Image (cartoon, rainbow, N blue to C red; front, side):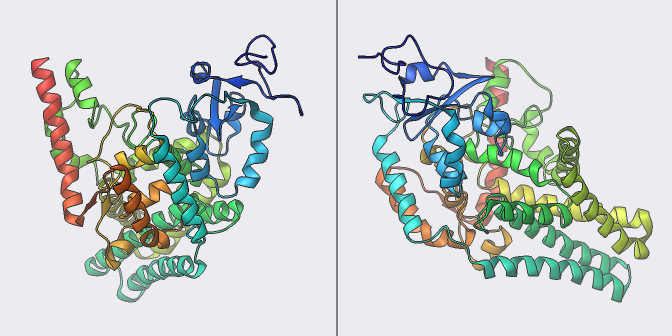
Length: 449
């Protein structure tokens, strides 16, 4: 009888796909854990072991995204990110190298098997309720109202002239349009509108490129990592913000090492100067352009160029080149405020730190909270107030979050998971409170360690 890592008695673990019809080698978690290195990545999906070392660079979501699950059970992440599992499984077949030994648990480490089983049952219940099916009319109306706002802003300047009142009003309308475009491209990036991934991607390129001036590939590259490992340092780009801001566990680390690049005990104050005003205008613009050039995303670059051409051709007859640039900056600054407050109210006040290797549901709930729903908040936030439901089921159309929420609450109550819901203003204030708390922890560690 063959040993662990042997197909039937051969020496040692196999490399490469198993021959068709041959018995699969079996592996233990202690063997799998050794393959979480650059250029040497294994992962487990549905108790089968896959060697993704060479294929990771061709992964549509990027090598970092799939690499973050190295040496882990990625079953729930696999289901969460992929809409057409039958199609995706075809890519897995050549990567199959074995399976878990029968006596091995499906997950490595001290994870709650019953919780994982119940979460998978919850997902199946949502599928049976058809909550992963999109209402195309809903999303068509969203696109329609974005285009209507773009037209309205131009008509205000065309009819009223480029005075202060009309310019401020147009900038506000354009900022709202830009914010809603963020939300719509976000839906498309998660393939939650069309049944064909290709249709979602093409539509996302239009919304992200022509309506916003950004790269869809750049957004997906960073955002999917956020979903895979939310609030995990060096895996979630949204919280890997040191040395500008210290969040969570980084506060103690910087304090103990006597690092003081900025007055972190005042970061809750300088946040207002460099956080909301500049994220989209400076950080995103630079990062986005660098990504398109370095990764040679020429199609995205053309889409982005079409946005800037349209914007300047539309408004330069009224403002001239300098005035149009100032209008663009005003819109980006207003839009940036919306982006920072709306996207971070669900995450910054939550647990932020290093990898804990939790199961999918527990890791998402540890890093997210909800904001009390209303018709206005749902629209204004693009339904990101249902952040828990969105993180558990990224491909679910947002108009179904309300319907799945009671099931999620019951699941959390059964397993003692904190399902946190805050008032809108409380959620915003908690961002500042969290930054202040992290800064105070840094100062204490800096002075006393």
